Image (cartoon, rainbow, N blue to C red; front, side, top):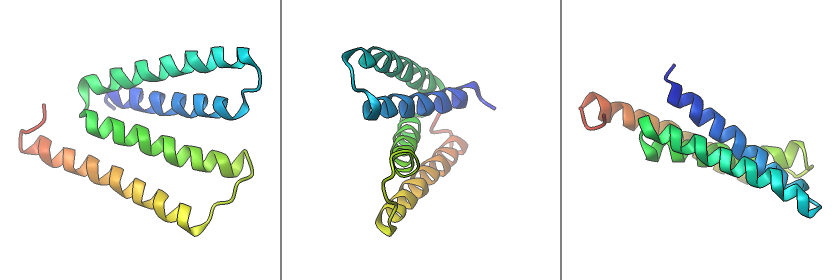
Amino acid sequence: MNKSWIYVALTSFFELVWIFGFNVASEWWHWIPILFFIFVDFHFLAKACENLPTGTVYAIFAAIGTVGTALMDVFIFGETLGAGKLFFIAILVVGVIGLKIADGVDEKKGLVK
């Protein structure tokens, strides 16, 4: 496994951590670790983009953040998960898979390093 994909996983994880922090922060000092996690998150995002196509990395980062946040709302904060949310989550997942497939095709054609 390419080390850059580990960076994608880490940036996606830390994105969910600081988004969770947004939901639970109730004191001014709660924002200190949140800011730390934001900086860590963007560090791993930058590292992932060094060796992977930036569009794919960002699409995965955004999709995991969106899907993860929606699922966090349901399972941790008691929100509902209706058909509309499931439909658009599925569209996000299909889009990310499509971008990865397209990058693979471009690599075979020699268009991507």
